[in-house]
Image (cartoon, rainbow, N blue to C red; front, side, top):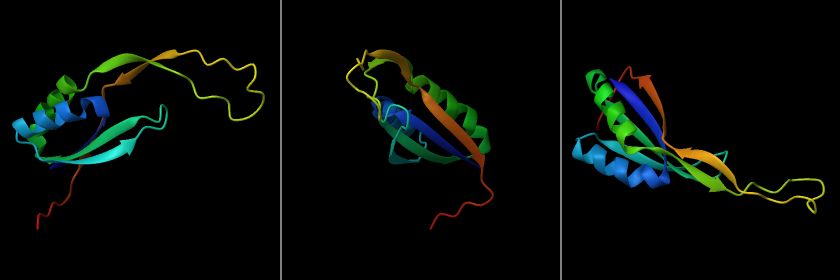
Length: 109
């Protein structure tokens, strides 16, 4: 048994949730926030059998796409902000960060 933890951007959350349900994977969704861009994320906790992990990873890959987005940088926290001109910066967002952990025991009450 494995615990798959997938952190995805909110834009991909509903698409992945629907795909997981359709493929009969049971998941718990948690709201989370990314540190770099301070944008909304969704963390999925998915317990599954070892042999189903490759199918699950393919499902996540197909439904969570990386894309480029223009982001206004955060103003400096100290110093002189008069000379600071915030130009939008293009960064890659989306996709998924996935952790696969071994589970020693599983109990469902």
